[in-house]
Picture 1 (tube, rainbow, N blue to C red):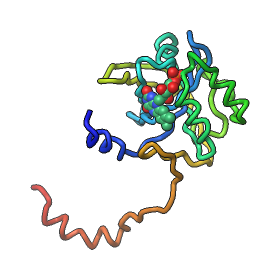
Picture 2 (cartoon, protein in one colour):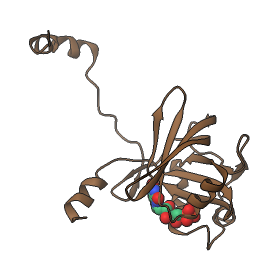
Picture 3 (cartoon, rainbow, N blue to C red):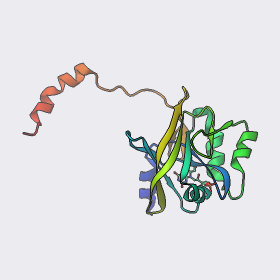
Length: 186
Ligand SMILES: Cc1cc2nc3c(=O)[nH]c(=O)nc-3n(C[C@H](O)[C@H](O)[C@H](O)COP(=O)(O)O)c2cc1C
């Protein structure tokens, strides 16, 4: 892929999902920026994983995974989970020693990160290989959230939610009504 296409891809703003699983590779956590809601009712989450990742092996065997949406305090967790393989390092124990707290999920056999912006326990309903990655669609069987803000991932850096960009208010939208009417389709 050429440099321009790579850089265009990096313009996308994503999350840091801490994807947890427990299977042949053992208790594991990896970082995934490609975590998206794909349906509100039922609540379905998609995660896109490299087929070579240990997490993929765990999910393939168990058909379940957790997503702890990294909070601003989880910058270390995001980098440890995203830079080592669960085949070589027990990342859950490593992170625990570094001060990250986990708890046992209620509806799946995995651990979730305490204090995450949100926690989603998922059962796989579908998976599909799409280019380089496998997309797992998880039905969210248990969801919870905290007051913590999620980390924003952009151009391979972590950011905090910052200044709000104002939406046009009702009056401003009304003032633009004539322009909209001019372009209304019959
Ligand atoms: C912030 C961040 C986001 C990442 N997002 C993804 C992703 O969406 N999908 C993916 O396959 N790998 C992603 N990675 C890379 C994996 O986390 C990395 O390959 C990890 O070592 C896999 O762990 P595992 O082998 O224990 O499953 C990301 C890494 C970082 C640091």
